[in-house]
Length: 130
Picture (tube, rainbow, N blue to C red):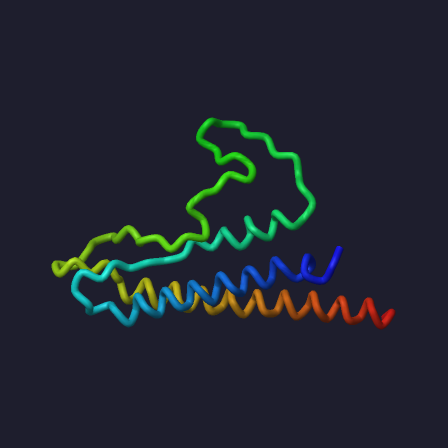
């Protein structure tokens, strides 16, 4: 297994979190823009893409509605958020919810950084023979 394979899940997670941060910040900035539609990124794509690099597990499709292994889905795409209630001017941004999502995403970004750092630290210790 090479270094890229070992660090790919963490790099993908950081890339996805960074992209989501940008989208949420744009939503917040446009909270008062008429007809602006809030957008978000479904984060699962990082896990799906990273899982392709790891050894395969046998998966069984137990219902017709389930996604097949390797089948494309909406994950990783920028999607419009379904509003709980759009404003009269057509804007779908709920500033309070966006700020909460931003804070949660920032926390998860920091966690992803910590996981990557720990992985690198463990590889360095292994190379040193510690």
